[in-house]
Image (cartoon, rainbow, N blue to C red; front, side, top):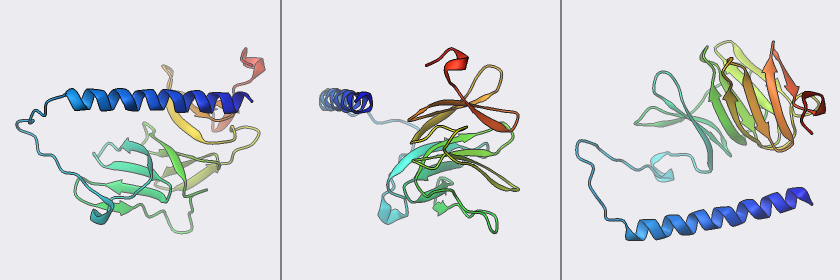
Length: 173
């Protein structure tokens, strides 16, 4: 099927990229960076495993979307993000993150659509007719500031509080 062909092509391209990266790394000479401090964190240091998405908030914190939920990193510590009372993620399997100009964070899931999290709570947009099904690969804003989402089953645009799938009536098939 077309999906299987795309996945096989993606796997082949990934293997080629990894091979090239290994070849380049083996021939590169390590050059110390003067004036910079480097630290590495592992799971034994509290870093979450299975990180799929990273976004930086205006305050400098890194937000991490993982297979185990939403985490924040302040440069010293990793912490699971605590949602407002009564709020829940649509899924713990987070694959995309994007900060909106108003500070809200858009969360894309592996198979559960998307959510918008702000200081007031969380709003879910489940995969289905208006939001494409499957894994959300990412969010991006266009020149007019409109938010777009790319998922397994297509593109969608967020406009006036709701998602609209890109379809044949837009000139796409």
